[in-house]
Length: 83
Image (cartoon, rainbow, N blue to C red; front, side, top):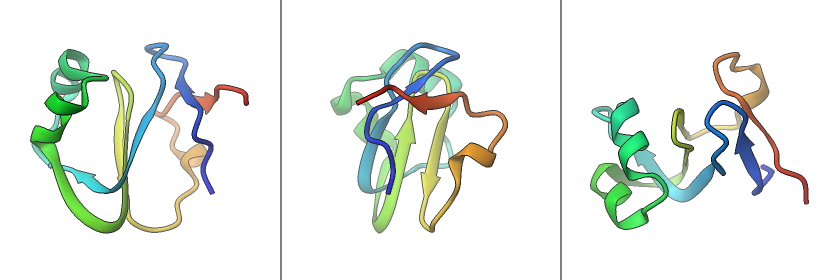
């Protein structure tokens, strides 16, 4: 399970998550900086992949397709935004 209230301490944005999607490999920092959190703009770089999940804030993004401990990724600054 994943917290659905993740917040990035680097950009102070809520982390969005999209079930059954991954990010296209062409995604870069400027894409998310300019398009978060507008879903209709983000869809341009989302690829449907059943069982995966795409995460993004305004400065970081990840595509996950297997059980992964996001806390072990040092570059991510995502924390629980409290429930």
